[in-house]
Length: 205
Figure 1 (tube, one colour):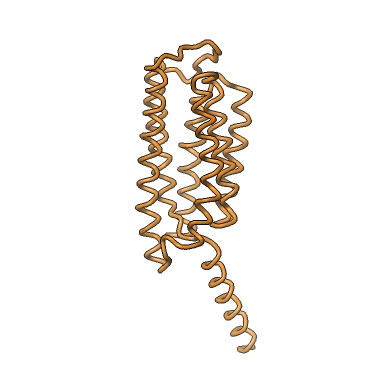
Figure 2 (cartoon, rainbow, N blue to C red):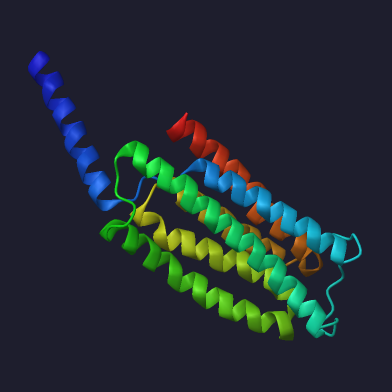
């Protein structure tokens, strides 16, 4: 009986070693929570800029002045920079606790699989911001979800569920284009906070 238990423990250890060598498992739930908070703050700033309305009417001919474009680019960029900065901080701290290297082949595979959909979606959304602003929010959600889905095989499986949720939310947003800001807040704000909280209590608490 003891031999059987020992074999099971050995198999679990081997599995754990293989997982550490093939997956980046140091993602921090706190980084998701803070990303969600920053996203909600950015959405609130946009809500104020759009005259305090979530249901901003979709109009293909709406204002696309330089001020309009610069505000939303600056708003989204600020949220992105803050989210990435805090993600690096918390993920680095988590990796040190687990004794895992921050930058290795696994990290590079994860980043490269996420980067392509994100970069493609970023350039696509910049064009939409001028030609069809109403499509920016759902497109951001969909491309972000695809990026998470693409990178999920190199990190925790929980990322896959977040990616699928973002895609579904983006597709629903296509049916309600006048509510892009609200869906953006739900996807990048609320979903990130929920995901981060679950991750924190599941892996870090």
